[in-house]
Length: 182
Length: 323
Image 1 (tube, rainbow over the protein chains, first blue to last red):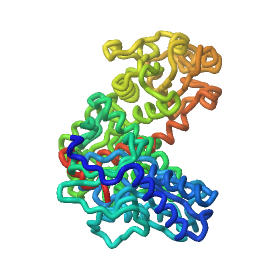
Image 2: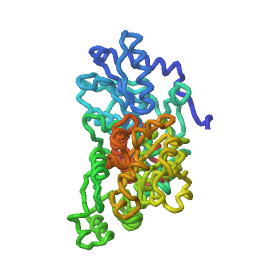
Image 3: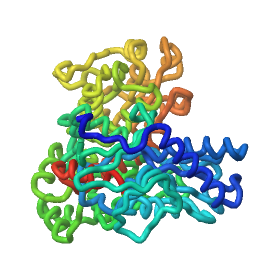
């Protein structure tokens, strides 16, 4: 099982990518006071907290962090079963009206998660601006949605998938190539 | 391999559900609570689904709770009540169901006076059927909301001692609670007049308490059932005052509890009969939490039942992993 996996980014490489993403977020936002980071359940949430830590190192202000579970906004829910487990949605205190909201996810692929996330955010308020920020862009878009900030562009061979691993859930910080369904 | 938590087509009762299935419902309900706290209390997950609420027995609380749950998931709903429906004109349950089916509905939530009617309907129509109470058989969503409320306040269900007090004999709420709680590892007791306990109740794996004082001494949680006033006319209990004197949950009795006690009641309450106002409105009472949890539990059941075949799960997991 483990031999089928291939490490693409180790802990140091992921940390460097997150630090660079944090700097890009600072550059693109008017002020860090107006920033709200929203991590997509599940691994986007841990990445959002790490990026918030990086921002606070540079700016003396840690942006608020929330979590979003997009399951109930998926466009393929009625075609699949059994129903996936629904995780926690907890947006940052004070709401998202007039904020610069940064959606943070582990992997950009079809674009459907980002679409669902934007639909869900619209039900909570009207941000001044929404940015999409992902650690890995693996291509393969099915919708006209592109991330604003990307940690790394990675190619994925046929039959393989990208796994972003975070210490809180997986015991280590890394990006790995794994066989699909494994 | 994750446990199979798929519920299948229908929710008829808790007797046949596994611990994994019950936990999946409660965990999903926990996540759904937050939706009711949003400013826009609506998610699009059941958009385009049509649900019929067929209540052939009077009910306000359960029907309204289901309706809120359905609307918060964006389903379209129609209500049928027994008065004014073709049921009073002599139409059979199957004919009513077939007519609804012909209008292309997706789910039926049914309350009916006959035990087994939910199963009967579920076997005859392709739509999902959710039992909202059938005779003396089961009332699964009520027991699920009771269990969620207990789990919220105690932190677990395993090993928790829950005593159901009152008319166990006629109570579908008691039956569903006994099945569900025991599957999830709680200890269950019952307490009530011998006339209102089923003859072989011990065979359901419950402790029997003849006196409310003993039940309170034993239990972490009391679930106090409504005493149907017809029971008195039918001679099961001598009088309401007598019932209150012997089995009523009074402040004095609750204060004598050795530890923390949680008091549940499925409503509507007969204040001064099975429960005194001091207790119903007191610090131990979680009766209004039950009502709030009822909406979340019903949202969870609707969500988990809506569409989908278990064998597609693996494929969906792969497709949906990233995007």
